[in-house]
Image (cartoon, rainbow, N blue to C red; front, side, top):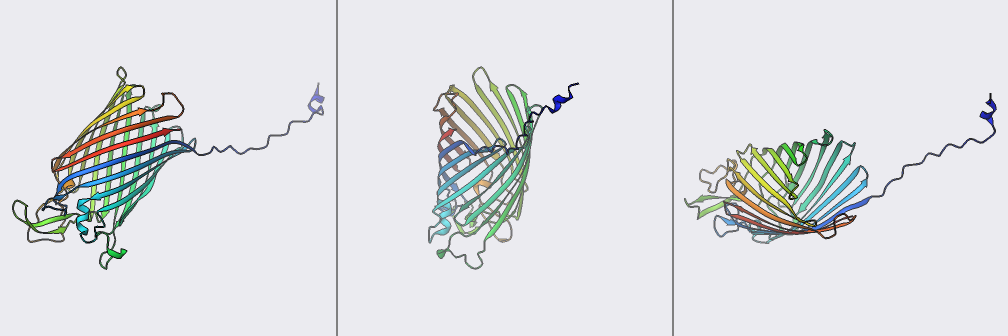
Length: 389
């Protein structure tokens, strides 16, 4: 027996001291800057800007936009989006003929999205932020959960979101004082949606979703009005009265999407449909087609066409008569009327650095045209630059 070898006198190695895990520093992964120009023109009965009962809806928005994506650690990622709007508007200015304070307005939003990969198959997304402009403020937040199934070939996502707005319904007053009887108004919105997606084969992917939103509070637009006591042609009216909405609104949507990739041409086709219904009797159908095509290894083009049709809310009118019920809901807003809308757009993206490099620069330009059968057109021009670290 060699029992003595167990106590040979050699010193046993000391146990290793416990070490704290090394914390990785926060790392910026992507940064983007964009400038959008939004030009709207047309006429709507809700506008007091003239020249007649159907007033100007002219609107210009200049919007610089900033985006940052940051990795906190291998499981947590944050994205921050900050658009800043400088707005000139004919219809909103008309309600403030004395001071013209609403002719130019500035608005800012900050939105933070925090993604947490709790496991290899489970992800939690938290969205929160706020919006502010002259005499209007809003806070919002939401949480979503995504589960990957069938070896990442399918996903299920559920979300709950809410927002809370407070505003002065009559706009700016000299001296920054809210007049007596002109208190702040409030509204809240709460919603949920669920989506499922499935990879059918290596080139085809489908998604379906359902959403529901409930709103409560003062749901009207402060500067909108409704003409009353007009002649039969609605070319001359005695006066105007502020629009009024029911105290609640329930909205529901059903949507679907099909995406197909064509390997031979490096093209992608995306088709989607959305149905909208609410308890104001609005029924809306939206069909969207998109096409992505790589022109070279460093550039691709994206083109889309969107068709939309909706019915009007049950209390839409362009001519209130007598007897006038001040407690009844009413609106002349062209956004809530019956119309057809058509939209098309083109975007071209250029990779400024060769593919495969660790750090990528890209730039894109975008143009979008939107037209509506109730006398409204919108043009959007956008240019963006991005850097991936």
